[in-house]
Image (cartoon, rainbow, N blue to C red; front, side, top):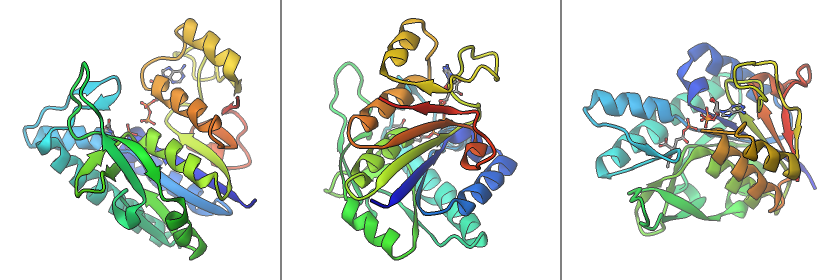
Length: 258
Ligand SMILES: Nc1ncnc2c1ncn2[C@@H]1O[C@H](COP(=O)(O)OP(=O)(O)O)[C@@H](O)[C@H]1O
Ligand SMILES: CC(=O)N[C@@H](CCC(=O)OP(=O)(O)O)C(=O)O
């Protein structure tokens, strides 16, 4: 099986021009087949607030009413996605920006209302791995934003970490797939206040211990939950750390296995 790398960048990297430029250079230089997934939650919150729309997050997910859906469509699908694609073109990476509606790549289902009504938030149902592979085989580099669709004309907001793990699970039918979650810290830290306390390897049993000890919290909770879901469904390896983990020089990041 050929190899495929799926790289995710979150809001903090996107917000910092120098970090974004540095990251995109590393991503461009990455050998082999690759896919980029980007978030942009911070930018969406910022622009929504300029428009007088308050943002509300519950369990790390944005409550997405009709107005907020308009904002995130403009920000993720337009502003962030197209800027990332243009910057990649400048680095000679022939990128194509996509939402899940494009080439019907990611379909999702509006999250059912239980204790919380998340509004237009979608849980991934299907990833069209063969359609995505046509782009890869044509030497295009897909760049996904955090938008999916329900197949009936409705766009839905889907967390970018979840898009990453679900696209990785789908592509594992065709490739030996690795995920790289790039964020502003060096990896999963034993002590959140000590940036050098990277836990180099987390497996299922250590994961349970870290959860019990409360060492994994906030944004890291859904991230790691997604990781174990992906590993249980065919993804070969998952790495988490700052963007320099995409180079051979840095081995100070977290690797996650079953
Ligand atoms: N043990 C931990 N190690 C590293 N980060 C942690 C840990 N526990 C919680 N976090 C938090 O998780 C955040 C990363 O998740 P998130 O905010 O979803 O990132 P992203 O930028 O990818 O959207 C970090 O900024 C950090 O505040
Ligand atoms: C449903 C939901 O919460 N979607 C996220 C999608 C963006 C995202 O995941 O961005 P980061 O990776 O930068 O956090 C949101 O709107 O914030």
